[in-house]
Image (cartoon, rainbow, N blue to C red; front, side, top):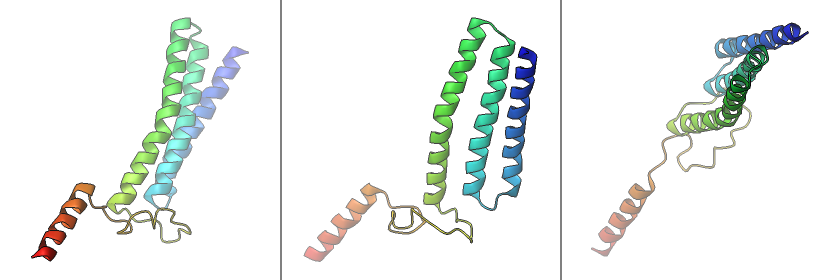
Length: 133
């Protein structure tokens, strides 16, 4: 019975990893590729690691696998968020058929590199000093 559970979890994990790899090829832009890859690969690796924990029914192996799964599920969405936000700020364009751009009014220069706060303060100070003269 345990062998069947291990086979099912391994197969489901492999299918999720396959979906992630197909998503890299099939999705139209960087953001949807990143989204499907992170979600599917995280679930796939989680299923495969769970199957490994069941197969090696030792306390040390199971705790290591649970720790890996925990940190994977915590860090993957955060990393994807930071990668996507950085891509948007550096100017990676959205898909042409995108309906909503929630970050469009967040930055003054609309999908370009935002000015550093120090540079903005320096520009303001320079402008004020030139106005006094």
